[in-house]
Image (cartoon, rainbow, N blue to C red):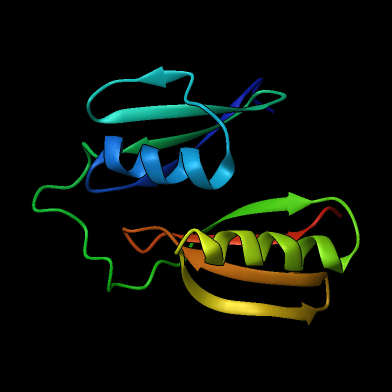
Length: 122
């Protein structure tokens, strides 16, 4: 297995997307360039925003099939609290909190339509 892994999210405007993710996740980038910005998630995992891959831009209306999943410790109420915090920030809700086979979860989208799920820690 690799010593580290980077999850890449394709965006139209990396600096604009970084403002969204910095506010939403309450973390600061560890690397910034005009078209590529990354965040350290700890233990050899990074989240990167890349705007250099697509000519003509991405269409936020096109459904995305991948998700970035933020796993939270605590009871289902922790998921509900995070949902309320993010809704107050004005995020686009894709799926409201619901109980599933793996616990309480919800899904929001970034400005480019990329999905962000919040779920409990396994």
